[in-house]
Image (cartoon, rainbow, N blue to C red; front, top):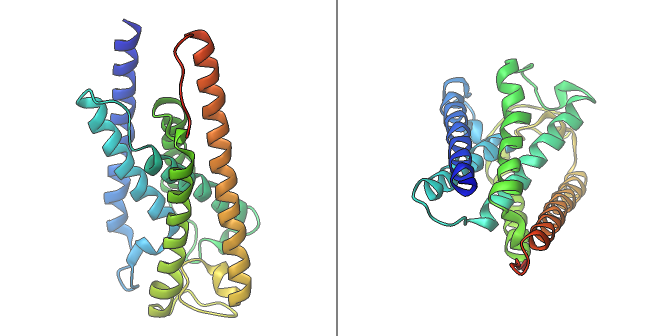
Length: 227
């Protein structure tokens, strides 16, 4: 009975998450600036939203069809990506909102969903339902890959093809603070950001390992293996 109730709860939870993520994903196309190359996909926030939509869709489909949990490396990496969205956005926002919102503050319900509620929903799923952080090496490398892919997308593709926003050192980078940085400053920022993401991943892995250890003690001799 408990297993069936848990299955139903997770299925309903993921349905709600999927409904929200799909709604906000579609909504972005109604408020995007189509004059900029890359439109709203220039922003790390939208990468986080897109990744969360894909991850939630995969997880919901698996649960709906009664399949075992999977997609651990991808889901954990996307969860870390969303954790970075929350961390970076609010860290810069509380210094100066103009560092991240060059055209002014966005509507409140979008701001809080994209930069807090949406990411937290996926993080909760990855930590407590999907147990995504069990595959340390694969997830670690996937998280690094996503970070490097976004840096490449920004530095090599979108920034050179856009003229706004404009800062004291550059123009075309999606976030105003990046346009005030020289190349070596951006390299340092990217490096520290990747290290922070890996710290978040390590924290997720430790939490999952502790959780599995507690569960194994309660259900001995059943055990879990973390790679």
